[in-house]
Length: 71
Image (cartoon, rainbow, N blue to C red):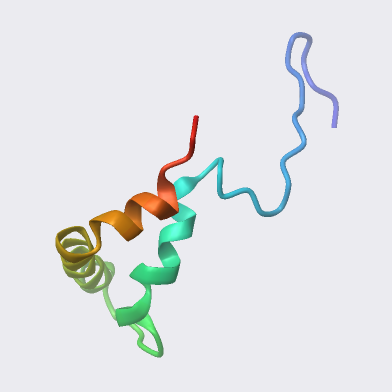
């Protein structure tokens, strides 16, 4: 691929949670989604919203540990 002048490509590793800290939250957020399917995206959003409220109320420190990078 030819890039325009002044544009440079940057190699990104296939797994880089430090670039997207929320990726590490799936280990605790996906529990209510396991082995389920949703007919509408609104249903999925509702389940994830409820899970987010539970996690933010009960797991504050573990969530910080998963996403709080030193930079």
